[in-house]
Amino acid sequence: MINLATRDIQHTLGKFIATAMGVGMLFGIVLIMIGVYRGLIVEAEILINDVNVDLWIVQENTLGPFAESSRVHEDLKNIIYVVNGIDKSEAITFQNIQLPSRDKPIRVVAVGYDIYGKISPLNSSKLIEGRELKSDHYEIVVSDKTGFKLQDEIKLGRNFYRVVGITTKTVSNSGDPLVYLSLKDAQELQFLYSNKEIQNNIARGIQNTESYMVNAIVAKVKEGFDIEEVAQSIKKWQHKSVYTSKEQKDILAKNLIEKSSKQIGLFTLILVVVSTIIIALIIYTMTLEKMKEIAIMKLMGLPNSLIINMIVKETLVLGIFAFIFGNIFSYLTYDSFPKLVILQRSDAIALFGVVIVASILASFIGVKKVISADPAAAIGG
Amino acid sequence: MSKASGIKIKNLVKNFGKGDNLVKVIEDASFEIQKGEVVALIAPSGAGKTTLLMMIGCVIEPTSGEIWLGEELVYKDKWLAKDTRKIRREKIGFIFQAHYLIPFLNILENITLLPQANGVNKKDAEQKAMELLKYLEIDDKAHSMTTQLSGGQNQRVAIARALANNPEIILADEPTAALDGERAVSVIKMLKKIATEQNVAIITVTHDDRILPYCDRIMKIQDRAIVFE
Image (tube, rainbow over all chains, first blue to last red; front, side, top):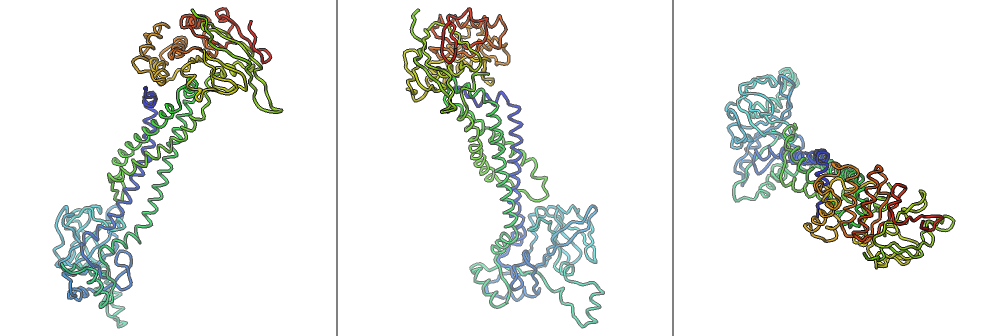
């Protein structure tokens, strides 16, 4: 039997491909939106994964350094270290700062850690140039997204810091690039007041102890110990909030990413619905253009199934072409987006399923038109 | 050549609407057309020519009466077959005012579409189509698209398409309206030849006086009744 859909598509190939490309861009945006969501999750977990610890000990009744402000004493790490089941513990700081650059200031998250400690948030596999921090002062490792080069001098607070290392794919949960400082420098940046402020405080009899604060203590649990049990014992005796890495990720997912993901999800859903409506309208228009031929076919006695088959096949081919163009479009553009976009094959496969269902739904309007076509319309000019 | 009945109509009535809005279009029409005959159907616009053609073509349901196509009674106060489309597919060929060929199919595909839908295999359908194209002297255009043919050539393809399913009757709706005098005469001569040689009954609706001399009979609709000249 003659494949009417193929013949019709061949007859208007240019128009068909242009239409498929247009719809494909919509599907491409859908893929990119899903990729942005995937990127959000990955970015949110980069730092937690790089620190790679079992426990996060933070200020009591706070959710930890990523969700709420938290301050604990640096020496808490020593107290934690002697808790039964703790293998190693370190102090760590996080703060948002702006790096001055030639073009415009860059917002980054500075991570401070003890460069002589046993836990480092700097994942050496992500170090693409230079080295890790070796000096307690005035050295900085930056993400490649900041645009700084090795040996660049960056003024932070009162001092200049020399770039000694460059990392890649290191961003905070908000997508800002990470920079790494020694704990002492980070504490100074975050907690040390100006000389005038210190003088005023001394005159008032206030001792400045802030520069010995950190934002969290991170710890690894010895093998054979239950992480939850160790966390419970710290909570009980140290009056701190303690979270496992999984709990920290959950907090991030719930408090920080949930709204964004809902927004992206809703936006993606709307795009899919819009794409379905657009395909339906295109198929409806394509069917309208063929109404005379359809009426003739019905008048000659061709069964509806043959004509419906043509409409449904054309819709499916349009959907599949649009899906292919959408994938090409997303792969060509995803790297240009400022935030991380992760395109996953599983998402593309899921979208393919949605496209097939959407195409079948979209073809209904054309099929309805075919069924209602009056064969008598073929006669009488 | 046998003179079997091609179309037989008995007491056919067609009304539209009801009550005060009742419009009577055809009243108590009875006539018979033999196979091998070409009958012209003429009437002023709005007199019911197309309605009559559509009733014979099993497209519009009459109000009452009988319709016989060949030896088969297809309508007696109701359609006697469940699928009137199958009757059209198997017994009737249609020719239209314009050729109305399907623009995305080539000439051969346009002709073989209906036989293939009737279950004829592709090879046999193509062989028959080529015979018809040869008969109509356009076999060299078999693989052309409709846009590559002249109006007269396309109309010949439309005739070939109407013949492709070996119909017992052909219903033509002003088949020469879009053609100049010479081509119009050529088409009606061809229809006459087909009627005779293929043993088909042909009704052609027309406003074209040029073709009337080539028809066997002229049928008119006058005051909702069928009369022959």
